[in-house]
Image (spheres, rainbow, N blue to C red):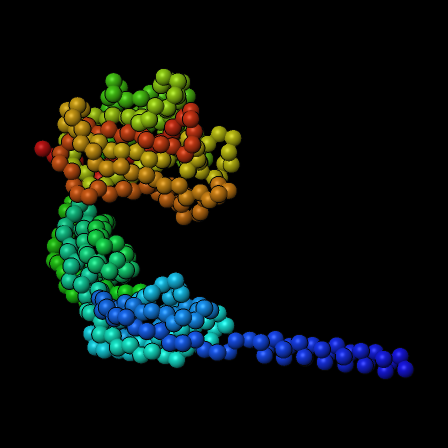
Length: 401
């Protein structure tokens, strides 16, 4: 009798569950939403924008556009219910294609399709390709282009010396782009480009220039001297201002080389009064187009195998000025090493490698000849007492008239 009661109870529970499940399923909205109304279709370079009005349904979630792109791949795009348009991208054709628009509600019911015909304008990748210009620069070339859609492009730069061909891939979504390609010998080279968008559409390969990169050299520091009257005191403790150009890059192993400057507030009026200027007389005229700076690597009471990069006393941002008389100064630019630390102070391995290799900065163009350089530190990583930096190296043309 007891077993019969238990079996009957289980049966009731199962029966109740089935009834409740069926009841919930019966309550679900399975009615598809009404269709939207297309207001306008505006072709763009490589796509189009479709403007619409939504139906009066009160549970609309989003609008979906479905189409086959120029590579034969079916693509689905979504636009929130708060929008009144949807963008179609990734097209490499100027022939008509059909876009199917659906309204999706909160229960994921789908409306009937509204077919829209779109004839895209020429893809922006061809406009980027057409706008590319390559000019010689010190130690390489400068490549520029325009991207009216400000969408990501990949520019494949083919460099051929007549024997071998090398390819460098440049990427950007800037409307106006200037990129320096370095590390090239001063020999005649042929440069060709092809452009690809995010969806895999590509232009053909097109020759852009035959030219010779300008000769580049490291500016010798043997003649450099400190203009003490215009510079802060960077000689605290084991530091020395002139270590900034002693061709010795600080390492983590020990501090025996003393290869960094150290600016201490107590030797400079009791506070770090930004900017902190280090003025160098090169005792010759030079032209430069790029430079590298290194932070201090060694730290006291810290782990011996972890460098001090991006820590509170290291220099972070600075301005570079040049002059021919140490009185009238021309600003070359404002620069920032950046801060890769996360909220807990962790630093990616790639950022530590950057610190060891040095932080490279390029100028917009080659400078006119100058004799004096002012390195004006504008911030560190948080210390109110000290600023450190290890080394600076200039690249360009040495001993020019």
